[in-house]
Image (cartoon, rainbow, N blue to C red; front, side):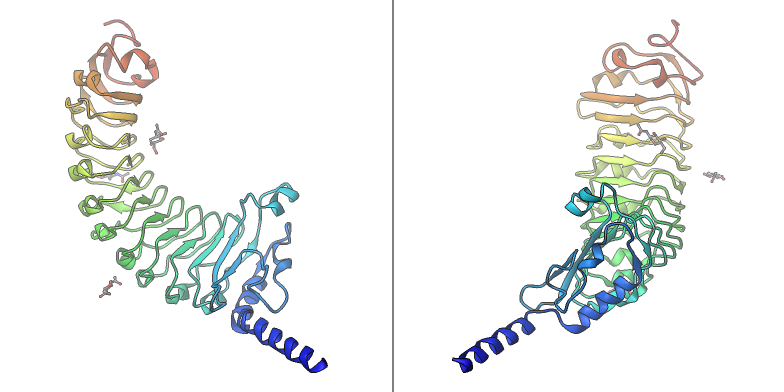
Length: 363
Ligand SMILES: *[C@@H]1O[C@H](CO)[C@@H](O)[C@H](O)[C@H]1NC(C)=O
Ligand SMILES: *[C@@H]1O[C@H](CO)[C@@H](O)[C@H](O)[C@H]1NC(C)=O
Ligand SMILES: *[C@@H]1O[C@H](CO)[C@@H](O)[C@H](O)[C@H]1NC(C)=O
């Protein structure tokens, strides 16, 4: 009887050893924990015991090989820990290089903790299975790793709302699996790589609120899946590539708050784009008089440019215009009648040279 018990117990023991995380993964996680300080929720209290695959908050393992594959720590969450504490998360500290020892990691999210500082460990580019890197909403400084292009399986690179500096790494365009790129609200300098269009899988490219200069690369229009392109609030100059208006699924194009010059390409007017923001640039010439049934705009913001001439009469043949802003230009002449002009207020037309008619003064 005792023999049997011993046999059963030792089988159980072997079983649980084989199924708990390897000590090296556990040690790496403990080093990550040691570099962070989470004072309010106590999420790291669960990071104890030998099996890091078992109930460690935000840690997931591969069910077969029992290696850590996912770290998912989010400071804004529906999780009951947050509800009970009646607050969002806050953490200070840094992201330890020990993360790079978790070489089966496929998803790393340490997001919205507001206070995590230091740099993105450059060794993460050696994690062969990394697919998701989400470090949004911290206080990270330094640059993106220059050899980020090595992460050939990376689908999401989300580092918005940090204090990242440096240039956009040239190797970025080698991320051939990338679908979401979100670098908004950092201090990233330099130009957008000429071969940006190599990112063929990209559906969202959000680079707003940085310090990018130079031209919008024509190659962007080769990204057939791109639906959302936000380059607003940078220092981009040059002309708008007309090919952007020929893209199959581009629905949002935001170039507002740059130094873009030249005229508005007529291709944009009859494109699939339905949120078009070209506000606060140096665009010249007339607004193309080529609106037709294909023109459908929830937002058409052309304010704060150097546009001249009259408001095109064809605008009334657009199938829908929700929000229109033509203010702060050099437009002149009669505001046409009919939709969409009958639902717009004076603020859509003010600060032009000599516009008149409803909703402004009579001509
Ligand atoms: C991109 O990948 C190619 C092929 O793997 C390599 O030859 C090239 O050096 C990489 N480019 C950059 C900028 O890393
Ligand atoms: C268009 O972009 C400018 C500059 O970023 C911004 O101020 C404006 O609010 C945007 N317009 C709309 C309708 O969102
Ligand atoms: C805007 O671009 C023009 C050239 O197109 C340049 O002369 C000017 O200095 C730029 N302005 C700013 C504020 O960068």
